[in-house]
Length: 270
Image 1: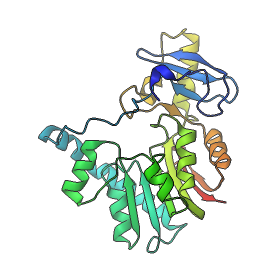
Image 2: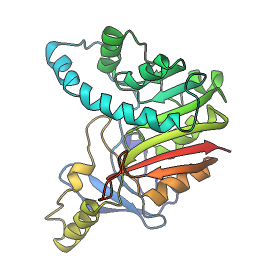
Image 3: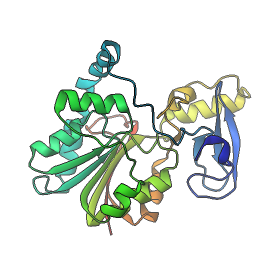
Image 4: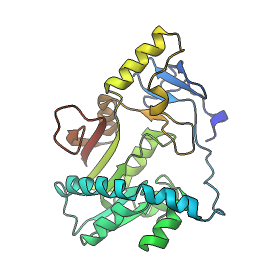
């Protein structure tokens, strides 16, 4: 669905026609639902896939490689998390928003079998060139997945994904359809419960929109940018409504004195 065809007053989380434009930014507006308090941008990615005629050049390759070590550290922690809840040596997994395919590669090295979905053509090229990994461009709600892989996977992961998609509820329900009963779904996403977000809302209201503080850093109008930010209660309800039971919730991969800025969840399909 393109941007002009969607009525942003219809909340992307609860579906009620009760959202209003609440926090204007310089290039978009954050809508706030009066029913469930969900916050999201009035921006959607074009429904057509990104162009596939662009090729990796030195500039894009260097940019991707600056993120490699950061991703490796994250994927190591993510791997430890899911290992506590499933046997990776015998699982069949799907990594949605696979990036460069590093998490997929990690599971395959543990003896499991992992497939990956990645809409970015350049990242798919890099994964094939560097790691020999084939990533799929078809999104999780595509008939290729929905018709052929129903109840197929024992593990599905969405690392820093749910905040990027056009419609998080529909994306999650499509993913859960592919999960076996008793299978594990794990995700990570930025938290709206952090002080920086709350203070930014206060500053925006008191200044009548002149000062947004950190709000523009939480959202992005770029393709595949952040379109919505969840509170942990909203995300738990979304997972429960999709037929999942949350079995672990944290805000950081490491023990720390101050709260982390993430929502990290492991859930099981009932």
